[in-house]
Image (tube, rainbow, N blue to C red; front, top):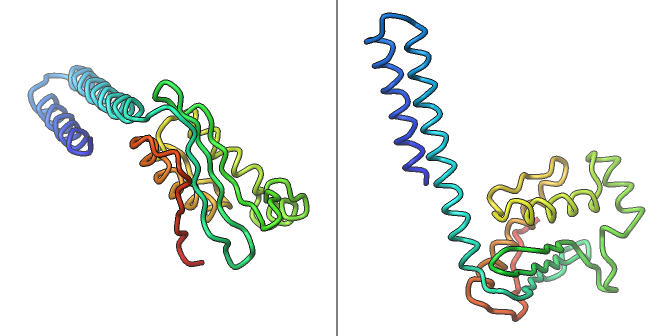
Length: 180
């Protein structure tokens, strides 16, 4: 995909240069450049869609779960995705403590996190989960500003879950989080 984008960009640049040199008017050059840009954008979108379709078509239906060990603060990642008809229909990423309580449900934690970073754990995890279902591609899910650690852990667990979904492995996957 990167190669197609690079070649498309080179094509666009070449067409722009040729149009500017060979055209009698700036208007003709602009029109040619716009056409080339439109063609490159369409090809990039087509390639992105094909990659996305191929990826989702490879996912086997089922529910997949990933967990980490507890971190130094007593939280572990717990992430479940559900795949139906080759598409991710649900994502439930979050953190749990040893009592099984979710960080997103801890009002005091959320209040403190929001005051320090501008976003609560609940808001961050809800956004990440929603974007994964909407976009169907973890690489298209944006990092949540103020929750970069959570975003990184989400990306890591999602990639492991997608590997499991490609294999149809519904056993809980253990993930190793990077050192804090």
